[in-house]
Image 1 (tube, rainbow, N blue to C red):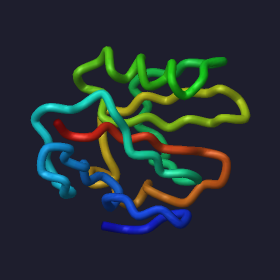
Image 2 (cartoon, rainbow, N blue to C red):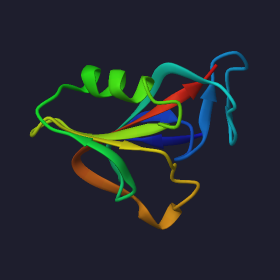
Image 3 (tube, rainbow, N blue to C red):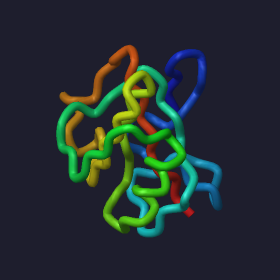
Image 4 (cartoon, rainbow, N blue to C red):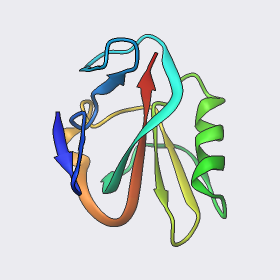
Amino acid sequence: MSCYSGQCLCGGGYFFSNSQSVCVQNCSHHDDSYLHYKDWDLHGYNANIFANVNASTCASFCNQRATCVLFSYVPGYGSCYLKEVTPQDFPGDWRARPGVDVYQRTCA
């Protein structure tokens, strides 16, 4: 577990398993709930982009895609970036980024 912005979360790219209450590296079945990494971003790797939406709508778009594992969201602009990769896949592109939030799906 790691702590970001005063909140302890799974390390970037690890999934929180709701059934086991631990962080896991691999997940075969994602939940429709998310861990929120405030002021972090996985830069690039956008599978889909949506504008003028709220975070809840962005989560719904991600939930509708079996391959979506996280999204970056820019609250100030309503920008939503769906991603099919995690920071474990590209650790060099996982970085602190004020004004951008990452929401990563949890594991069932």
